[in-house]
Image 1 (tube, helix red, strand yellow):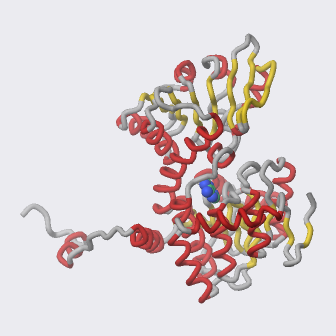
Image 2: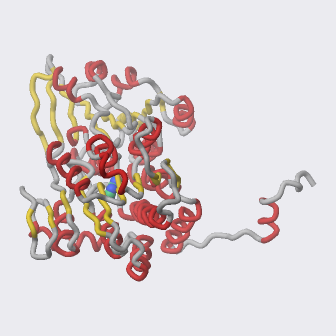
Image 3: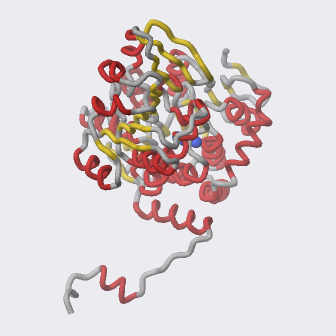
Length: 428
Ligand code: ADE
């Protein structure tokens, strides 16, 4: 598929523009659950805080991302959107963004790695002043391949835990020379998106791919960060026996005190009916573990990159591979045992389902939009580094969300305010 011009004069590379009507309807459906972003969009369309700013956004192309892209356009931005994962694009959404909103989109569900990387380079050719990244591939590729563009960058915003780990490594190596906003670390992002979003959408993806009953199954969850906590909570809620594996002793205690069995993967490998990796690291399930698994064990990943499960090793151990359902591939090992891999080891919630529900992405993307506005407002004032979303913006998003949910909360009395800002009151 080649990049062409539409009658509305934007470049694009999407699967099929005829899917636009379906995409439009689904984008509007998601918008109903995104009241915070809607308010920002309304303000942005009056104030135009991003007028003429070139933005390259690398996100999962979903109905929720579409609402972010529409808000950025309302703010006056000149934004292009590329996929942050080869399997996560919703082709109807990509079509609607091009046709209905005139936003250049380069994303195809099922694109190969070469196409994915070509789209990253198209995002760089846009000469972004702002990069919205999900996993830091655009920033890392710019640093490696297009250092000439760095001087023009005002800053980047990063959506994921994995991307922030990468940015920290870039900063330590001295190659991150502009400000980066750690959107993931906002409380209104990771408390809800990583925990309840990943929790629900991961199980949604597994169920859509396999239609298995989770009640009574032993589910091994690798990683007890915010995503792992959410998946474990929801798996228990559906009646699974949950086992957690960890490398962080504090998180391991937390998992144990939350009531889960904790053990090394080499022990869990014997027990699991279903394995879910959410660690952000590589080869968490590897050759020695496949050898120990039960016949028919299912493995999948909900961490950012597709390297948590060592599928190369699994391929080497196998004499046969076949697709048995969409996103469900059976590997037959020498000796006849089978291991089932979901979604090619890529984010199962976005490959086989639709990613996190709109209600949590509302807060995540409100953070993204405000982080971009913050970078523009503070252009030239921030040195190279990784910045948290200012607490007042985090609180503002929470307050708007609460109001939209119809939930009122208490406020401090002046006496209480004085008490928590002073030190001289103690035992009476
Ligand atoms: N990451 C996880 N879920 C997502 C969604 N629905 N849209 C965009 N990015 C996501």
